[in-house]
Image (cartoon, rainbow, N blue to C red; front, side, top):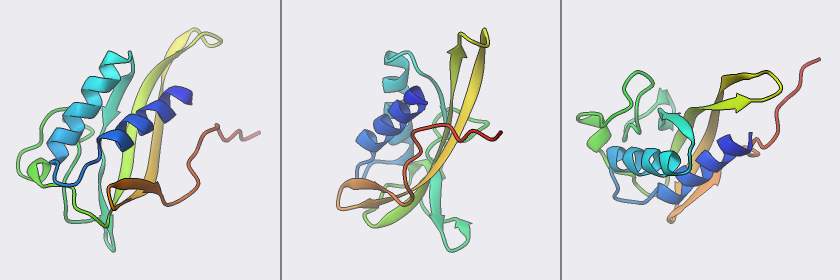
Length: 126
């Protein structure tokens, strides 16, 4: 979970007004790779009808620059689904597993705000 939270931090650090979705995606993936994080990013704007107008930041099935919608820019006072996964080796299970997260965020005055309490622990269902 700490690795997933670190990727969220990387994404927050790279959200900048005027940056394209592709620029944010590329910067985040490069930083994650430099830190040894195996990441996939597929974030998108949210609005009244779920996926709203605005920049795509990666796609689940295309971890690369996205034509047209990836070239749209981050705007002030907008909301996004910070959606991604990481792959992490779990020694107790002796395998690498994916950890998927999605957090609703708002970008206001140059800062990312989590719209719900940021998840920092696993929810255990017994």
